[in-house]
Image 1 (cartoon, rainbow, N blue to C red):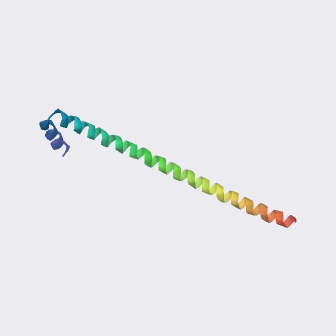
Image 2: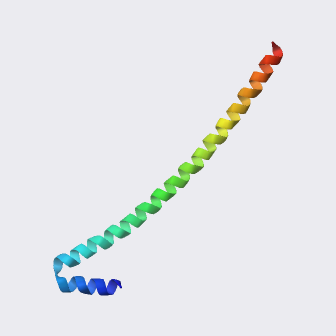
Image 3: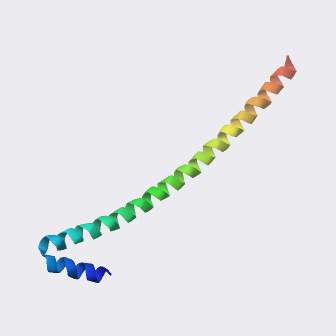
Length: 73
């Protein structure tokens, strides 16, 4: 398929070949960028899970301290 597209671009002149080269470069660059974005999103998701776990732990500690302080009074 790409061979036919390249042959058609060559037959249409220099600007068609340049456009095709730029298009292919852009597609490859976009694919690389998309992979990086997906990796970043996964890392942020993992970080949010850690933050949620810490939040739950802090909430448990607050509840324990609250119960303990009411027993003293």
